[in-house]
Image (cartoon, rainbow, N blue to C red; front, side):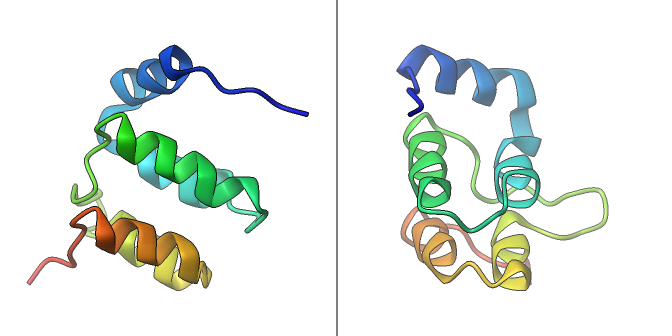
Length: 84
């Protein structure tokens, strides 16, 4: 069993900045039942849902390419958009 504290989540958001969601989607990306929960915690801790990566991609695109429909919905509800 795992436990996540609000302080730990806030620390991750502050420490990783714009890379927070990308790391959550790609590096933790096994699609398990904890994965969307972690994403919700990061979004609730004010992780930016719209930063573009150096390659021009976004967290929304990462979730879409990975086939994580539930994560895609979480990001869209949080205001994530693909760049024009």
